[in-house]
Image (tube, rainbow, N blue to C red; front, side, top):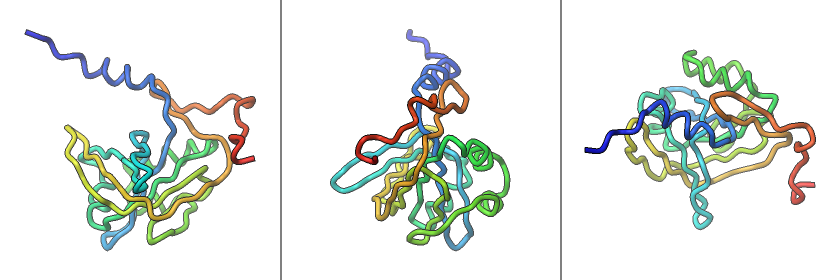
Length: 170
């Protein structure tokens, strides 16, 4: 009989995979809101698809389900406090009221983010205690700055020497 791996060790193992930090936002008939996330990635270039994972109890998930759209704002190194706002239990509408944002294709995009995309929801897939959202990118853009990173359960930023923009952006 095989024993199940320890869930806390699982969390720690995958916590060693450094990721960027994003805020996923949505707006619809029932209001606006957002959440901090690091379980996201590009999925396809043809068509342009992005994948975002929502905890099943995430209060942003019903907003995405109802509106059929969501935005991904990739946070800059100086936006750690903002990541905390969207990770908090504040009422959804209060989260966006506390930060500068604008709307693109009806979805809130966080000002000062290093990049962003707006997606039309294509599919929701059950994935254990999470729901996987696949969205088709309908708008996107670049900002400036270095990324906010998540590693081993904490926020980090790149050392100063590594904060230059990729060659394609210079």
